[in-house]
Length: 381
Ligand code: GLN
Image 1 (cartoon, helix red, strand yellow):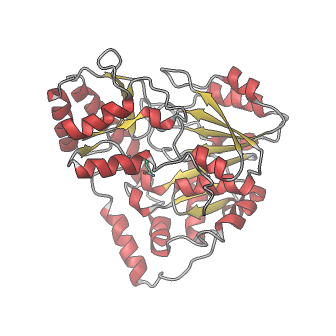
Image 2 (cartoon, protein in one colour):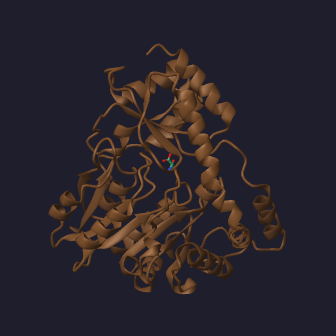
Image 3 (cartoon, helix red, strand yellow):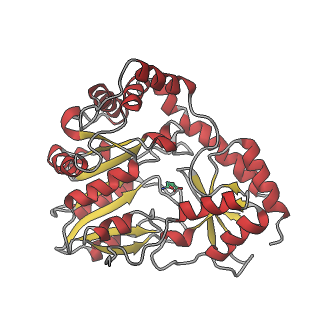
C-alpha cells in the first residue's frame, strides 16, 4: 500500500479543464497557452542546432552561451551584474524551477507564506517537502498584499515567502511600495524569497516590472524563476531558468542534477542565439496588451464585469449578481453548454473561496476571442 504524500491533491485544474474543453469541443480560454504560432526563426534555430549535432547532454547547469546571454539580458534590463556560471540554472520550465528551489531549502516544519489565490503548484510543492504553508489572502478585489498580515504571520519558523508578479490568476502586479514593504518585513531575518516572474514581459498599461533582480539586497535571499515558454509563445517547450545567489544555486543544483540532470540541448542552443534579439521580448507587452484590450472590448457585450489587471495572459471577470452558482459549477456548465472553457478562481484557494470570478486567457488569435465571446453573448445567463 502507498501512503500518499499529498492525500488532498487531485488533478491540476489546467489538465481537468483542457480535457473537458477537448471532450466538449469548447474554445479553450482556460489553460494559459497561446493558440498562434511561435516565431519561425526560433524553430529554425532549433533545427539548425540539431543538424549541427547539439544532440547530446549539455552541462548540468546549462549551455554556457545561454547562461551568458541571460546574464547580459538581466544587466540590460535591470542593471544587475550576475555571475552567469554560478547564479543561473536552466530548467525544464518555470514550475520545475519553483519546485526545485522549494525542495532545495525547505525542511520539515519550516513555514512558508503563500498568498492566495495562488498558482496551484506552490502549496503541494511545500507540503511534499514537509513544510507548513501559511496562507494569506490577497485583498479582494485588487488582489494586493496586506503587509500588516505578513508582518503578523512572521515568526522564527518562517523560512520563505513566495511572490508572483505579474500574478497568475489575477494579473495583479507588485508596486514599488510592495518592494519597500517586503524589504521591511524580511530585514533582520533569514527569510528566503521565491519570486515567480514567469510573466516578466507580459506587463501592461506602461507599468514597469519590479523584478527582484533590480534589488541586490533582496536578490541575495531570492530564487527568481522564469519561463521561456511565456516569452516565446512555446509553453510546450517546457524551458525556463532560475536565478539565485551562488550559495542558493549550489543547493538548487544538488536537487536538479539528480532529477533532470540537464535540459534539452538544441533548444538551449537556439535560445542562446535568439535571446540577443531584444525586439522579440520587448514587443511582447504591446502585442498582448492589444489582445487584452480587444478581448475586453468584446466582453463588454456580455453581462460579466472585468476586474482590474495589469499583466500575465489572464483577466478575471466577475459574475456577481448574475448567477448564484459556484465558480466550479459555472465553469463546468460553460464548457458543456456554452462551449467556452475558463478557469474557476476558487481552484487557486485551498478552501475553494468563491468570489464569483472566472479566469480567461486572452493570449489567443483575434478570431478565437471573437468566436468565444460570440458564444458567451448568446449564453443564457
Ligand atoms: N501556467 C498555466 C496556467 O496558469 C498552466 C500550466 C500548466 O498547465 N501546468 O494556465
